[in-house]
Image (cartoon, rainbow over all chains, first blue to last red; front, side):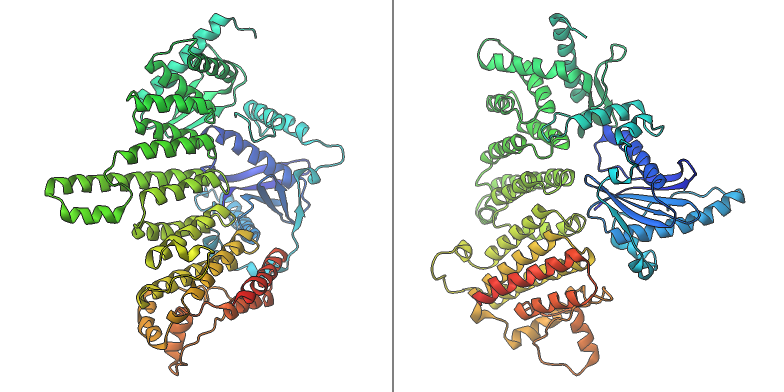
Length: 190
Length: 431
């Protein structure tokens, strides 16, 4: 039951701008962590770009679930978790983070630097749940479910192309993506 | 790029030496991994050491692996001689890249047997390969062989109770040795539990890791119910954070079975053959078993309510209830009398926690077949901490129906209905 990343973006007219992010990659193999982080940033930004204002959605990709909430004022939050982490708790968190972030931008205008120490929620979802009281409202909201990342893309768009063009991904990550796509078996050496 | 045979030879020798040196200089390496790196850079070694993690750059693997693989096979075919040190280095390199290469482990078995290698080295190597390949069957198999070698060196090992009895009989010097052996054994068990837990965290439902865990307890902790109790309680947090891990819950079922066997009768309780022995357990051990089952079911209910829609939780519930049902059938006469219930009530009040009050819309009322108490304070305490004997078929049906009545997800609904069907078809028919 893991939370891997929590990021806040501004949904611009052409692309999403990453404002702040926090990650917990301790469960990944040490040498993969930097690539994993880049991919999570890439995926989060892409999801925010392809999600309309005022929408909540969950996108399933392999063993990950990406939960997104884009507000009407274009502030978008994405949580990437595994399939065990309760969906409801993720949306509760996104709600809270969006509100906190709005307060932050006010602080920044007043020249205070907010710390992201409290941005990352506790790994135990029961603690995270206790943090907020918006649960009742959320039970009624609609959450769109996408079974793959591909369903977010436009007709004819390919994920491979987006990966190759992305500025979030370094060369090593792009190379990693290419080899991972080729080897889809569990008997791989790497 | 085409590498000549000599160049490959030199490169591989260098890499094997680099790996060996890395281990010598940094005995606290705790993880291995591959670094995606399509080309060699600046004639640097592909072995990278960072924060106690050993990395191998991917470009060298296509040279390294076939070369060391062939060398070992040639040695095995007696076409090429390798001295002991070279064998240790080569097998180590091989296994870090491919731990399922049985021949390499077998060569190490030979080295171990002739004293050129200590069993601890192999346990360490196994632990490292499991960080990258947590399922690797050959690693686990070899690990059991090594542990067996270690066990063979112990006096009357694995039989904790025998060791305890012996302690009383032997002289001080021998008692010290036995104590030392016990401590060593406890240490080994602890280390194995940690290795298994780590591997289980790296791969979901890691059957091989959990099976190994069971093997260790069966061979090194027979009759030592404290270990089983400790495992049961220390794993609560782990399974709560891995609610889809079927193997983790299966392990809990194993622990329960062992504890019950230990508290009560012999293994014939779980066999399917003919009429069983008459229950010879005391009311106390019967109460302890009741309590074990009750706590496990309560824990399971808590998880089901907190994390809806996970089949592993419902499957666990079935197993635990079935075990309970079998055990109960076996002890019809020993079922809780009113006296023993009341006597144990005060003990229970110290035990407890409850999942009932925690969930607003999911509060589950369970039957209380005790005398009704007029004191509301007592009743409140009772709602929180229920006595054993409340685990029964009607209570289970009540759990399912109150769950279905409250708003629940589609998956949770179908799992609950399936459970109810199972109760009717399997338990209902038998009782």
